[in-house]
Length: 338
Image (cartoon, rainbow, N blue to C red; front, top):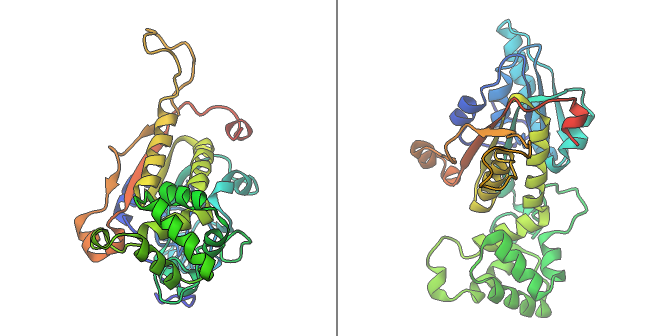
């Protein structure tokens, strides 16, 4: 299929997602990062007329591509004599999952998927500023139509201490204080508005011997700014907790991450829902009554296979964690999301 939208993206770990989420015909499935519907089509085609699919994304172009692919998938299912599930695509950030899903008469969810990070079409689009394209504007907003600060705004307005904190927190950048100082000095001479401007400053800040290892020297800086612009870690925390509360008993949540900050957050969040007991460790019997809500289905994080990593180098860092809601989900949907 050739997308008329021009939004072509290769989804990662499709076999693993299909294996662990494995939706059934009557399930309610949410793809909270639908993108170009790469994973969505795999999940959607397993649903039947009694199922329901919801796709969420911040990117208008991604939603247009998802609509095109899901519509074609539905037509193919009808041609094969199978009535497809209804579906709905919604524009928004998964941090607002409670508000968005409250407007759709769904009840509990059976499957929900998060594919965190930037898609290939976004990386390759020079106007978005996510990568090192020469002359690309330092935008980095997932929703290009939002009124949030761009990366250029953050570089222009943040103090040196704030910049250093952003680079450490979102990029785990060893040279964060030095890069922050160089940014402040450089912007006193001229605004930093393009990828070239930022790359030049980062290269000047990092000693030459250190620039020769670890890939592009500005990689961690670009990652940190993107995370800050979109508050990605805060959004992920809110989205995960909302998703768990919406899961039905035996419902499954899958999360694909691409760097350690995201993966550590998902690991910690799943663990918190799995072990909710707050009794002293020396108490022989639990007295707090805080029951486990999730149980892991993957032993740690599932890594991308070697063949896929060779075929799609951008998938090399992908990790998948999947957990299942226990039978301790009781009460109404209103109670579940409080």
